[in-house]
Image (tube, rainbow, N blue to C red; front, top):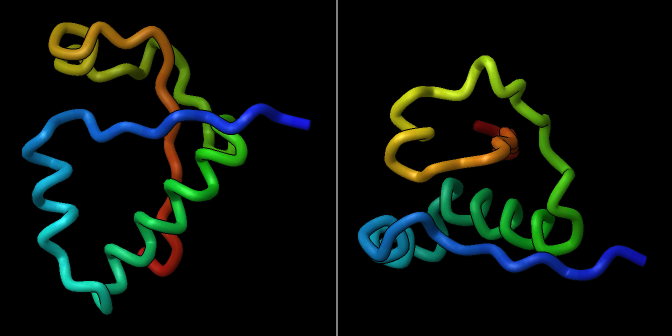
Length: 74
């Protein structure tokens, strides 16, 4: 069994923007589903090769790995 993962927003501003979306918004529903999926399995997305990491992400967030998760119907 896979241990549940922790999911965090990259910034307080982004979390506030997410929380301001209406409950019926299809984007909010998709993000909620993504958070649930990622908590259950942090590897459910597609791993991005290191050579394709955006330089801005490396500098701003000091990332070591990067995954892409496609939102449903998006």
